[in-house]
Amino acid sequence: MDFIHALRSALPSSTLSVDSEILSSHAHDTALGQDYLPASVVIFPSSDAEVTIILEISNRFSIPIVPRGAGTGMTGGCNVVGPCIVLSFVRMNRILEIDLANRIAVVEPGVITGDLQELARSHGLYYPPDPASSDRCTIGGNVAENAGGPSAFKYGVTRQYVTGLSGFYVDGTPFHLGGKLYKNVAGYDLLSLMVGQEGTLSVITKIYLRLIPYPRFRATFRASFSNYDQAIAALQAACTSSVYPAAAEFMDRTCVDAVRLHLGIEVPDGDAFVLFQLDGDQSECDVLRDVCLTHGAHDIEIALSDEDQDAFWKIRRSVSESLTAMSIAKRSHDIVVPPDQIGPYLRRAKALGKQEGVTVLGYGHLGDGNIHVNILQTGPAPILESLTEKLLRLAVDMGGSITGEHGIGLTKKKYLNLMFSDRDIACMKAIKEAFDPKGLLNPGKIF
Image (cartoon, rainbow, N blue to C red):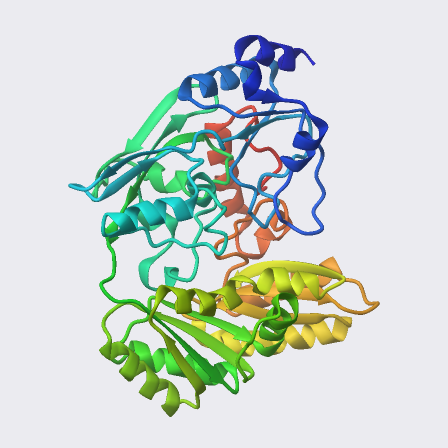
């Protein structure tokens, strides 16, 4: 292919790979049941200069580019759908600066989220967004998807921490938006538009992130309830008292048992489980205990040390892989409903699954209503796409959204009209065309 020859001529040989295993492994994310094609070539740039060369060749040969982080996404957001250059940022992984005076981190897109969190903590600072894959996922991928995580309940998602971005438009023109700023309302908010764009509008090579003081006290509080309604009532009561948890994560009996079988670890009794993360002071534990007991909780445990807290969170972070292990096939969708509708939604969703002969369950973020809805095939009945549509439509009908933190990618593009009018979608497509008139950036995603 002529464009590969041009890339070989312009870039160091170690930057480029056409190895068949690399082409395949870099052609998809973790979305289950989603098709993909092998990449034409995978490039690992290590500088802005190399990125500009790649963009120039992409434009010259009209060959698409698929930006890629660690591939931990769950909607096919970096899946290859045709001949293309996969642009992997694994080598652009430097934490360029921790600016203590301004409490800003400046990083390249390939930085692992957990690595930034650890370095920030060593300076007494905190970067709150914490996807379940924080030990593997990258800041660039988090920005592309506007990732969240358990702490979003109190602290918000990635967009709330991005104060600046630098990179390139598709034609190679550099851009710099924001910076070490806490307030900036000049012009249209292109900075926010770039967060959650799923690699369809630009190539980002430098990210400025707001840091906050690390909490002086942290504890994880685990409580078992008989049902979700009790757990939701307890959370609502806690938030109107003197306690505002940093996170409130829920799981059901099936989720917890799947982890027990998959990892061989001890799990608590009960039918609905909530992990509360507290980061105020020690007295909050006593208040939350009283609130939970008042609302029917049992088997309450509190972990104070990092080791004990990690053991509690290991169960929650292992749910997805454990459900996959117990199933013939699995589909996962992150939907959002108003928090007080979690119980009603899950009851109706489970009933829809039963009608189709499959298991539907949910777990996730109790505080912000973000449910990871899983469809499990455990018997002969297959998972039908029509059930996915019913589950997403149910969320929208209940005042919710078809995604809360995983994005649209490939898996949900056909359902965008459940949430948006034709005019809404036309406006979004016009934005895409303005940024990427030839459709070279991550083609086939979102629309």
